[in-house]
Image 1 (tube, rainbow, N blue to C red):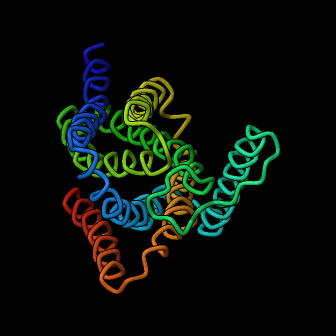
Image 2 (cartoon, rainbow, N blue to C red):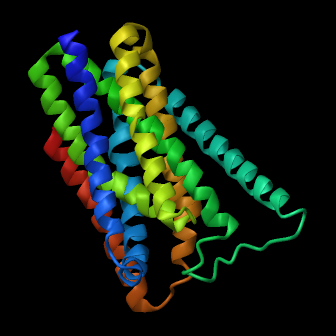
Length: 266
C-alpha cells in the first residue's frame, strides 16, 4: 500500500507543476498574451516534433521491446490516418452545427483562432497528451516497482520534461479557440491520465508491456499530425523575413530544449 501511495503522489507531480505554470500564463494581460502566443506556438511545434522524433519513437523501437521496425512504421501511418479522420469528424460536426452553411477556414489571419483548422488542433492535442501522460504513468509505476529511489528520480525527470510540453499544449488550446478556464480545466483533466496509467500498470504491468511501444507510436503520430497539419500552416500566414526567422529560431529552440531535457534524463 505504501508503494501505491508513492506511485500516485509522484504521478500527480507533473500535472500539478504544469497547471501552476499554465496559471502563471493566465496572469499575463490580454495584450501580452496576444504578443506571446504566436511565438509560443512556434516553440510548441518544435517541442512536439522533438518529443515525437527524439523521445517517443526512439523509445518505441528500443531493442528490449523486440518490436519489428516495419510494425512501428505501420503503426505510425495508421496513427496519422486515424488523427486525420478524427480531425475530419471535428470539422463535420462544426459544419453541421452551423446548419449546413459553408465556412472557409480563415488561415490568412494569424489572430483568428475560431476557424475549423485551429479548432480541430485542440481536441487532437488533448488526445495525444492524454496518451502521453498515460504512458508516463506506466513508466513511473514500473520504476517504483523496481526501486523507490529510481521511481522518485524517474518521476522528477518526467515532471521536468512535462512542464514545457504542458505549457505548449495550453498555448495550442488557446490557439484553437478554447477559453482560458476551459483550457486550464482540460489540461488538468488530461494530466490525470498519468495517474490512470500508473494505477493500471501497478495492477496489470506484466500484461501491458507488449502494448507500450504501440501506445508510444500512437502518441507520437498525434503530436506529428498536430504540428505538421494544424500548426505549421498557420505560420505561413506570417511571411515577413523577420517573422519567418523568429519562427525558425523558436521551432529550433523547442527541439533543442527537448533534446537537452531528454539527454539530461539519460
